[in-house]
Image (cartoon, rainbow, N blue to C red; front, side, top):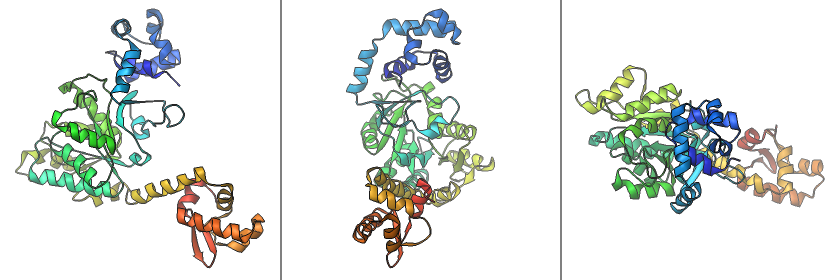
Length: 380
């Protein structure tokens, strides 16, 4: 596994983005070797003179150990391209984000990602919503969160904040993507909200600590919002709104775009109404989104994953029984004969497995494997 110091180091070098990081990895094998490489080798890897000059300046001015200590002190975790959720680095790089062109090589994270974040929908819109727009964002976010969908947005004033707050109030997960370093929360009045999000989801950025919230940072940030999501909902957005940039990224990334219709007399509705004209799906409720993205069972699937994870700690008897069960009903007595085990052991184990949701009793002491277990563990 690559040393995280060098991922952070290259992240702080101006002019070296995802494409150049990929070229360096392909050429050198890891970023530690690239960090110490000479100019000629860097040029052979595809870096131009400007990027090499920036790298040499960074190497001369950075103490990577101190940078890592600052990250640790700030409670910031690092998630890189090659993180699969195991070993030394327990956090998995979001696989939907990995699918986009040139995904960010490094994410700074406060909070954590979860498997259920694979079912994520972004809600974006203007910083100055009407009461209608704010309420629409809240209604959609609350309903999606209640259905087990993670709500993604940008922590901005207006629609973004309304979506984050509603998701939290519904007891769901939410992810905020910043256009600044994680120590430079913008707007500042959302610092407490960011803390709550970190405790029930994640606050993330691909910008190093200390990066101010400059306007140039926000359009690139929007590609991460859409990249994390199955679809993007635009609530209210005037023509110059960054929410429309997020929708454009969503189209490029093959994500679904949804739009909340609004008054033809209000400027905030120009963006979503135009998106609808261009082919975005008009929605009037979260149900429309869940239906379109086939997410109606998201909550049930998440629960099934949690139940099935119990198999990691299952005893040998449970595993053996599950290996012999399928969609065809099997009586406990038949299992007793097949396995050569006492009926008392079989019965008590099946009772426990039924509580875990791994098997179902379909008649007097007759069992089948739960559908989720059959699908995930390919028992049949």
